[in-house]
Image (cartoon, rainbow, N blue to C red; front, top):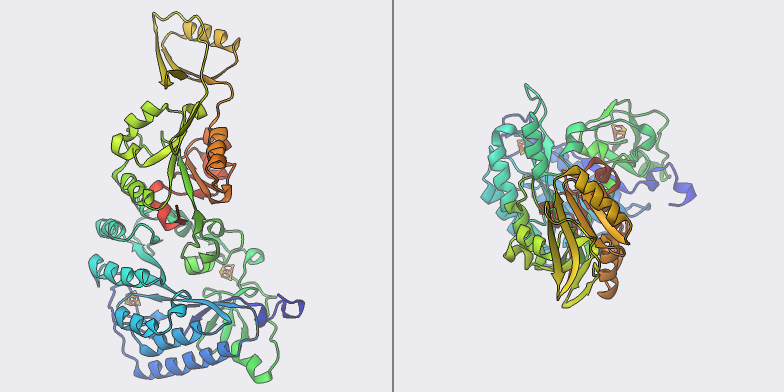
Length: 517
Ligand code: SF4
Ligand code: SF4
């Protein structure tokens, strides 16, 4: 941004636009715009839209991201679809999205777009699912048609507890790499139950942000600075929730001058009470997760070329089983990215926990806290050479070995006194000892999950900035902190959730990352 543009209209890089439209072809029971017919306002809406397009064509400022957020359904009107193509074709427009109920003729639009394939990369869709008005099947078919044509999409629905099963069906029917968001339902007679919150959080791991909203923070808001909302008259506001006018788009066109935006008055709201508001807060955690796609609610997916998973509590649930949705996602991910394990379990234990078929999806990993590394047909075993003179009578000792070398001992010792005795004997030797009564585990002193993961990444030339590590415990943080893409699962220890960059469950990863072998 040039200094002369600072604080002016030309410093804006993201614009929300809402026209005069206030009608929709759907009749959702809670919505004031359903099936209203307003021929005059549609005419005015079209005029306003064309005026907006002309202003953007003449835009002299920063490269723009645009987002059309109509009251009602815009894309059923040809002039909106054509206008979006016109805007996307402009070099100063980096991307453009539109909120829609997805009832417009997507195939027809794609045919029109086929002549200009470059535009498809710039056009995005925020598709809202309305279970009262359409079926999962129909909605998903439309969305997949757009997604498969390289249009970036996100899907969303209101978290209505009475349609939980339908929303679960929607999540299951959508391709795993499409982000489904759940908006907290307004006007509920009683607050959501813990079970409902858990349910919606499972569908949308970012649900808590919508549930909480955010206190308005004018000092941390990009509204009126790098982002703004413009209505059909051209009036400019910091965001779609602010009622404080700070300028007018067409004023500067008239005067030919670079208009200063008046941000001296705060927006006067106490709460940024919807996604389109709180996503403007520059300090919101969403930016770390969705990156540049925060504006459109479509994850800007980082490229990942290797994924490491801890096992216990990360891939397995409280019963020690891998949930079906995780298993399906692992199968899906394994087609496009090499998967590895990074676990304190021995290889045999990991295989038993995951089951043979699931285990075979992994190309190896760091087992026994790095005591054994297996990767692409190679191995590195750090043998535990000496075992103290442990009285075996009441201690159940298991030795885990690879090609004849023991890389891990585990001892189940139920008597406290005996445990302490063993621990003090182990202290005298250069072992690495993990202790969680009644279990004592011994591995080589040089072993470590972090060292193991780094070794594998180095040998296989995985750039660390393209490595994703997923864990659940504070102990996992050491290895996770070695890469920029660290992910805690939703039921992780609080420390890990605070420190990891992402908090996402394994079955949601394809929606947030781009995988490549
Ligand atoms: S699809 Fe959206 S705008 Fe249309 S009636 Fe339903 S909630 Fe209202
Ligand atoms: S309500 Fe809008 S303008 Fe006000 S702080 Fe929140 S995002 Fe910014």
